[in-house]
Length: 404
Image (cartoon, one colour):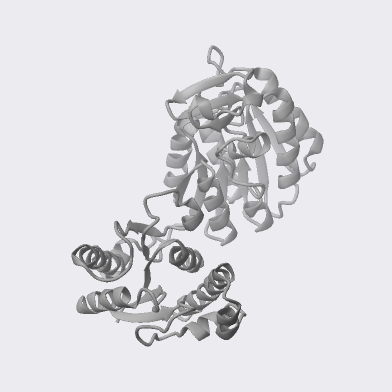
């Protein structure tokens, strides 16, 4: 039968987890309880003890108790819980996972859950679910359910929340849910998109789907780029059409949507064919206008909406991006092409539009060509990025790399 892992601190949250365990089992599912408590005595015996979790984190439980360092305990138990969960998944012993807790418990549970692949059912009832949660979720698909009140015993509110959580994780693990989510078995292609490249991506996506591929679109907002890199490194994709590489502009200049310095690494380092386009490298992203750092006061801006402010990159910055792209792509072991739409790389980088500045793309092109390996094709098109002809050319270039 379907087995759901419950991971949590059974010393301070034992009553809560006992109730959740009962609710899940009432619905016809097995449970497997993992205890990551450190200080007090567990309220009931777990299937995997806290001693086992601490050992998996490479520090004995007795040492953690003697040291009395809460930060150390959270770090060790988080690492141990991740290792335990990873093993359970590899051994096909669990079909879903759920936890409950405050900041510390959510840290341990989310660390463990991030060790599991996208699509595996994951749920945390958390007191921090309504705040800034990116540090807990990362690039995973963890579902956070607000606890509303503290996870600190049973009452008429907590019972309702916990019962809902039991129903939610059981619904995620229902065989009918898993069947509906099953892969079509078509090979997958990753493609990056931004609002400013939506037209191009939609055109390319349709063309690739018509060729028999399942196309997975990632929104290039930092998290999207990191997720695409993670899944690419896991070998999920047959190829990558990196149409929107704007996150590197944020990484270089200091915008809020950076995907980190590892962006553009995964396909190159994992022998995956890719076509790369400098989509939206004309812009650096900030939140509202008042969030822009004062050193950029004299720059050119465009208010995309009330919460997003775009800052135009300069020729000096795009030249640096050209060098970075070359360094990244030179390491590729699979075929790679770079396509340049010389009439503009975003919706607002077009003649007559606010960010049109041809010298910036010329600077990118020249720096890229000076530094890129001779075996990597750099192809220029006298089109705009959102021109249907360019979108089809990008999709066709990728299909050719795939032998289509």
